[in-house]
Amino acid sequence: MTKFFAAILIALAACATSSSPPSPAHQQKLENEAAAALSSMRAQNPGIDSLLSASAGYAVFPNIGAAGAVYVGGAYGKGVLYQRGTPVGFVTLKQGSVGLTLGGKTYAELVLLRTQYDVDKLKAGKFELGGDVSAVVLTAGAGATGTLDPNTSVIVQPHGGLMGGITVSGQTIEFIPAG
Image (cartoon, rainbow, N blue to C red; front, side, top):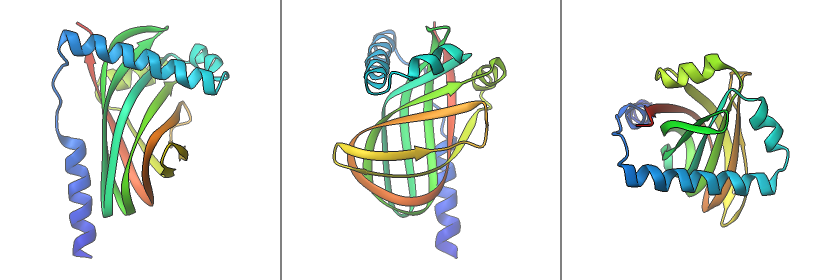
Protein backbone atom coordinates (compact mmCIF):
# COMPACT_ATOMS: atom_id res chain seq x y z
CA MET A 1 0.00 0.00 0.00
CA THR A 2 2.91 2.36 0.72
CA LYS A 3 4.20 1.89 -2.84
CA PHE A 4 0.78 2.86 -4.18
CA PHE A 5 0.74 6.17 -2.29
CA ALA A 6 4.35 6.89 -3.28
CA ALA A 7 3.41 6.31 -6.91
CA ILE A 8 0.50 8.75 -6.60
CA LEU A 9 2.79 11.42 -5.12
CA ILE A 10 5.37 10.97 -7.91
CA ALA A 11 2.68 11.15 -10.59
CA LEU A 12 1.20 14.31 -9.08
CA ALA A 13 4.65 15.90 -8.81
CA ALA A 14 5.19 15.30 -12.52
CA CYS A 15 2.11 17.41 -13.21
CA ALA A 16 2.98 20.18 -10.75
CA THR A 17 6.20 21.57 -12.22
CA SER A 18 5.99 24.86 -14.10
CA SER A 19 7.36 25.46 -17.60
CA SER A 20 8.92 28.55 -19.13
CA PRO A 21 7.92 30.31 -22.37
CA PRO A 22 9.64 28.94 -25.49
CA SER A 23 12.20 31.12 -27.29
CA PRO A 24 11.07 32.76 -30.56
CA ALA A 25 13.04 30.19 -32.59
CA HIS A 26 11.48 27.32 -30.62
CA GLN A 27 8.02 28.88 -31.04
CA GLN A 28 8.42 28.82 -34.84
CA LYS A 29 9.73 25.24 -34.76
CA LEU A 30 6.79 24.19 -32.56
CA GLU A 31 4.28 25.85 -34.92
CA ASN A 32 5.85 24.03 -37.90
CA GLU A 33 5.79 20.66 -36.09
CA ALA A 34 2.18 21.20 -34.97
CA ALA A 35 1.11 22.05 -38.54
CA ALA A 36 2.86 18.89 -39.83
CA ALA A 37 1.24 16.72 -37.13
CA LEU A 38 -2.20 18.16 -37.90
CA SER A 39 -1.66 17.58 -41.62
CA SER A 40 -0.73 13.95 -40.92
CA MET A 41 -3.82 13.47 -38.75
CA ARG A 42 -6.01 14.97 -41.49
CA ALA A 43 -4.52 12.60 -44.07
CA GLN A 44 -5.28 9.58 -41.88
CA ASN A 45 -8.75 10.77 -40.87
CA PRO A 46 -10.43 13.29 -43.22
CA GLY A 47 -13.33 13.70 -40.76
CA ILE A 48 -11.08 15.75 -38.47
CA ASP A 49 -11.74 18.88 -40.56
CA SER A 50 -15.40 18.98 -39.55
CA LEU A 51 -14.43 18.55 -35.89
CA LEU A 52 -11.88 21.37 -36.15
CA SER A 53 -14.35 23.77 -37.77
CA ALA A 54 -17.00 22.98 -35.12
CA SER A 55 -14.56 23.59 -32.23
CA ALA A 56 -13.97 26.88 -30.44
CA GLY A 57 -10.28 25.96 -30.27
CA TYR A 58 -7.85 23.10 -30.35
CA ALA A 59 -4.39 22.22 -29.10
CA VAL A 60 -1.91 20.20 -31.17
CA PHE A 61 0.92 18.39 -29.42
CA PRO A 62 3.22 17.05 -32.17
CA ASN A 63 5.51 14.99 -29.94
CA ILE A 64 4.60 13.65 -26.52
CA GLY A 65 6.94 11.24 -24.81
CA ALA A 66 5.54 8.82 -22.24
CA ALA A 67 7.21 6.25 -20.01
CA GLY A 68 6.12 4.01 -17.20
CA ALA A 69 7.52 1.42 -14.85
CA VAL A 70 5.27 -0.91 -12.86
CA TYR A 71 3.10 1.43 -10.74
CA VAL A 72 3.89 4.93 -12.00
CA GLY A 73 4.21 6.70 -15.33
CA GLY A 74 4.32 10.11 -16.86
CA ALA A 75 4.20 11.99 -20.14
CA TYR A 76 5.31 15.42 -21.33
CA GLY A 77 4.95 17.44 -24.51
CA LYS A 78 4.69 20.96 -25.88
CA GLY A 79 2.25 22.20 -28.48
CA VAL A 80 0.27 25.06 -29.98
CA LEU A 81 -3.21 26.36 -29.11
CA TYR A 82 -5.34 27.49 -32.06
CA GLN A 83 -8.53 29.52 -32.24
CA ARG A 84 -10.32 29.79 -35.59
CA GLY A 85 -7.28 28.12 -37.20
CA THR A 86 -4.82 30.74 -35.92
CA PRO A 87 -2.10 30.06 -33.32
CA VAL A 88 -2.83 32.09 -30.15
CA GLY A 89 -0.26 30.60 -27.78
CA PHE A 90 1.71 27.63 -26.64
CA VAL A 91 0.72 24.78 -24.37
CA THR A 92 2.57 22.28 -22.23
CA LEU A 93 1.02 18.91 -21.43
CA LYS A 94 2.02 17.00 -18.30
CA GLN A 95 0.58 13.64 -17.37
CA GLY A 96 0.99 11.48 -14.32
CA SER A 97 -0.43 7.99 -14.03
CA VAL A 98 -0.79 5.30 -11.43
CA GLY A 99 -1.46 1.67 -12.23
CA LEU A 100 0.08 -1.25 -14.04
CA THR A 101 2.26 0.15 -16.84
CA LEU A 102 5.56 -0.69 -18.51
CA GLY A 103 7.53 0.75 -21.43
CA GLY A 104 7.75 3.96 -23.40
CA LYS A 105 6.05 5.52 -26.40
CA THR A 106 5.81 8.71 -28.41
CA TYR A 107 2.68 10.11 -29.99
CA ALA A 108 0.94 13.22 -31.27
CA GLU A 109 -2.24 14.44 -29.59
CA LEU A 110 -5.03 16.73 -30.73
CA VAL A 111 -7.30 18.17 -28.03
CA LEU A 112 -10.55 19.60 -29.44
CA LEU A 113 -12.26 22.23 -27.28
CA ARG A 114 -15.86 22.58 -28.40
CA THR A 115 -16.87 25.63 -26.34
CA GLN A 116 -15.33 29.03 -25.69
CA TYR A 117 -15.71 28.28 -21.98
CA ASP A 118 -13.24 25.38 -22.34
CA VAL A 119 -10.79 27.54 -24.31
CA ASP A 120 -10.98 30.21 -21.61
CA LYS A 121 -10.54 27.56 -18.91
CA LEU A 122 -7.39 26.27 -20.63
CA LYS A 123 -6.00 29.81 -20.97
CA ALA A 124 -6.68 30.42 -17.26
CA GLY A 125 -4.68 27.33 -16.31
CA LYS A 126 -7.64 25.37 -14.97
CA PHE A 127 -7.88 22.67 -17.61
CA GLU A 128 -7.43 18.97 -16.92
CA LEU A 129 -8.15 15.76 -18.82
CA GLY A 130 -8.12 12.22 -17.53
CA GLY A 131 -8.61 8.54 -18.10
CA ASP A 132 -6.85 6.47 -20.71
CA VAL A 133 -6.03 2.91 -21.66
CA SER A 134 -3.59 2.33 -24.50
CA ALA A 135 -1.15 -0.01 -26.18
CA VAL A 136 1.45 0.96 -28.77
CA VAL A 137 3.80 -1.50 -30.44
CA LEU A 138 6.57 -0.12 -32.68
CA THR A 139 4.97 2.14 -35.31
CA ALA A 140 1.57 0.46 -35.41
CA GLY A 141 -0.66 1.12 -32.45
CA ALA A 142 -4.04 1.68 -31.01
CA GLY A 143 -4.97 4.17 -28.37
CA ALA A 144 -8.19 5.16 -26.73
CA THR A 145 -8.31 8.28 -24.66
CA GLY A 146 -11.40 9.58 -22.98
CA THR A 147 -12.41 12.53 -20.95
CA LEU A 148 -15.19 13.12 -18.49
CA ASP A 149 -15.99 16.43 -20.21
CA PRO A 150 -18.47 16.02 -23.11
CA ASN A 151 -17.16 19.28 -24.64
CA THR A 152 -13.65 17.92 -25.17
CA SER A 153 -12.36 15.22 -27.52
CA VAL A 154 -8.85 13.82 -27.73
CA ILE A 155 -7.32 12.19 -30.80
CA VAL A 156 -4.04 10.33 -30.42
CA GLN A 157 -1.72 9.41 -33.29
CA PRO A 158 1.00 6.94 -32.18
CA HIS A 159 4.53 7.48 -33.50
CA GLY A 160 6.17 4.41 -31.97
CA GLY A 161 7.45 2.64 -28.91
CA LEU A 162 6.41 -0.29 -26.81
CA MET A 163 4.13 0.43 -23.88
CA GLY A 164 1.11 -1.17 -22.37
CA GLY A 165 -0.91 -0.85 -19.25
CA ILE A 166 -4.07 -0.04 -17.48
CA THR A 167 -3.74 3.16 -15.53
CA VAL A 168 -5.61 5.99 -13.95
CA SER A 169 -4.06 9.13 -15.31
CA GLY A 170 -4.59 12.83 -15.46
CA GLN A 171 -3.30 15.42 -17.90
CA THR A 172 -2.85 19.07 -17.12
CA ILE A 173 -2.32 21.65 -19.84
CA GLU A 174 -0.55 24.94 -19.17
CA PHE A 175 -1.03 27.92 -21.54
CA ILE A 176 1.57 30.53 -22.51
CA PRO A 177 0.25 33.37 -24.74
CA ALA A 178 1.99 34.01 -28.07
CA GLY A 179 4.21 37.00 -27.79
